[in-house]
Image 1 (spheres, rainbow, N blue to C red):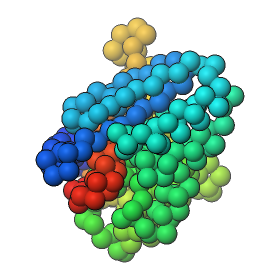
Image 2 (cartoon, protein in one colour):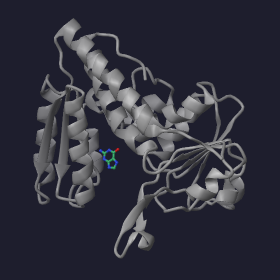
Image 3 (cartoon, rainbow, N blue to C red):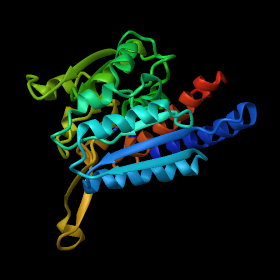
Image 4 (tube, rainbow, N blue to C red):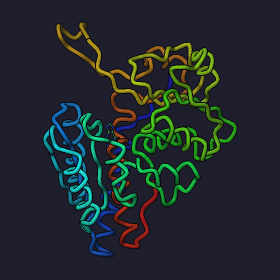
Length: 299
Ligand code: GUN
């Protein structure tokens, strides 16, 4: 039976470190970390995410502002808001919740965020820093940053000699995760929907990261015995066993089957999910510390 990697517990530890760091920053420099979360439209899933980000920011003692813009907001208005936030000294982190409505060019919006306040790590400057190994001054996207902390809790900091397979090539998770694993000396393969014989490739993985958004796609016999499995997926599926119309959350991995093979595995929920918000808080604190010239805690 695989060891459970308890993301919720690790996330609580990260948040505790953030709270201490925020308190120490306030004591040393009189600075309170500030985060602005921007949401356009009323997508229910995005509303839930944004509300929990704002709640966690307040819990960390941050100055937290939320900008809720109507679905038909034009791009120029959004760009003006971001320019204001870029110029606001009380704001150290800016997050524009994705997806944006189709009439807005999300790429242009993301590139308009000051890279020093880009706590999502999506700006080209931060992507470039991560891919060239400048991790000390980069912002790393929150989900892969959290996934990496969980991986290193069970595998240590140096992943030399280990094969890592990342299933999924998104800019938000797959590609930055591959770069983080590479920076930790793993031998990394990125797999995707056009990969031939995905099952055989996954069986080579000492570290398997599933980030495709397809419920329970990774089967138990795709997993190398003893492997570490990081399941980034959060998918809602029907759960008739719980009653009519009920649903439940599952990952991209068939958890029950995977547990019989893996050495360690993240559950869904309670694995990678809680780490994402915790790392957003960590990135915001780091941003505020950099601006104030105060050493930030390491995560
Ligand atoms: N939508 C889904 N995940 C994310 C994320 O990590 N950051 C932002 N800004 N939007 C998202």
